[in-house]
Image 1 (cartoon, rainbow, N blue to C red):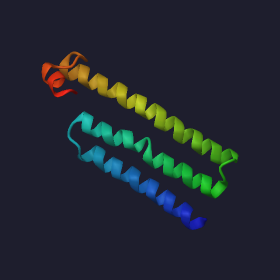
Image 2: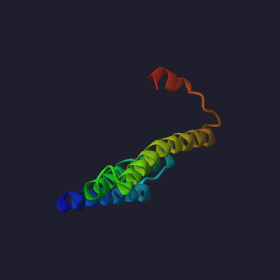
Image 3: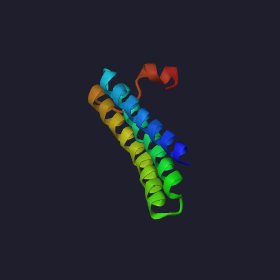
Image 4: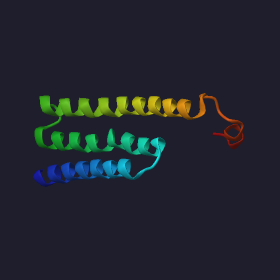
Length: 106
């Protein structure tokens, strides 16, 4: 059980570090947004799993970890969508699809 806990924690930390590196390396806001979105889902899910392995799922700590991971996943996705819409509105002045995007099917 201890080995599984350590593996899950280290995987969660490694994913968060990879997301941070992606945020630093990417050039534009939409590319950075992909890494920020991944950081709200993958890492916290693994950390919550590690807490559940160590403490048990149906304990206060386990349920709190799962609740935090679920809230981060749901609210992180909503925040990513809102941020992407704000970036598109700032860059193009409208949220409407362009003719080229409509022809492409986007």
